[in-house]
Image (tube, rainbow, N blue to C red; front, side):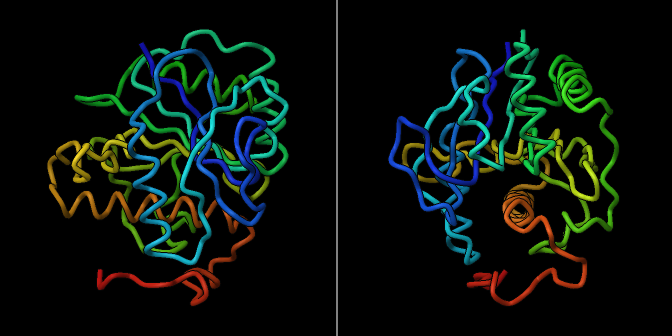
Length: 244
């Protein structure tokens, strides 16, 4: 069974929440079905790190929106997180995603499976991407701007370190889909006491830090899709690096 949520959306809120300013990144959970959300505590922690490390304005709270809803198009950045088969995705939901991604939106996909990448999630993600965009996933080059929008990274880390590449689909010259199979949200999840909820393997806290850096890069990329290579690491994005 998959946890199917599209998360982390940029723009105003839904009709069920007070809208954030349009210059603010807002964490929004978008339902594909009625399963419980994946790694719900990760969202607040991710937003907190974005606030601490960058000058990106990001909202504290998230609000649900269904993939079939016309309001989906208000949110340029989405994350799909799952640990198994996606289940049925309606034609309306697929059409909304197609319109969203073809109009400049970004979908980040995260495999949050516990013990390793999920074959059923991987299969269904590839089918969904092909259905929505008409093309398959391919490796993101190691020198791509995604790895250098804020931090310089050699590979994608999450709670796991099973897959050494991101995959994606480009629309024009921008990435419309980015796929991580290493449980990025798991590295961000928080316990009720406020500390990390899950161990990071095999690299421990250094690997968790690298996962945070990937998360920061993805948010910065999403809010600056027109970046050129020589404009990465610009000073106005940096509030502080906390000595890291």
